[in-house]
Length: 103
Picture (spheres, rainbow, N blue to C red):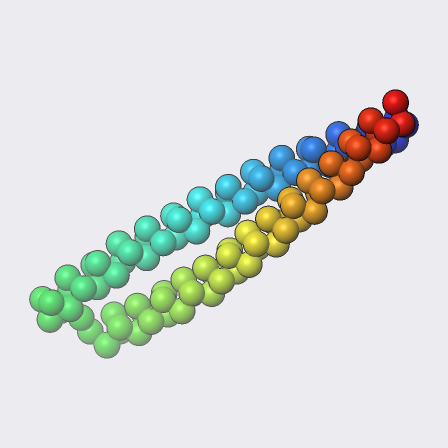
C-alpha cells in the first residue's frame, strides 16, 4: 500500500515538473519568436532603405533557418512533454483508484 502511495506522490511531482517544463519551453519559443519578429522588422526597414548587403541577406537566411530548426525542436519537445504529462496523470489516477480500492 505504501509503495502505491509513494508512486502516486512521485507521479504527481513528475507531472508538476513536466508542466513546468512545458511552460518553460513555451516561454522559450515565444521569446525566440519575438526576437525573430524584431529581426525581420529590422531587415524590412533596411530593405526599404536599400541598405541591405548580400552579407546581410546571407546572415538573415542563416538566422531564419536556425529559427525554424529551433522552433521545430521546441515544438516537438513540448508535445513529447505533453504526452508524458498525460500518461503520468493517467497512471497517477490509476494508482489513486487502486489505493482507494485497497483502503
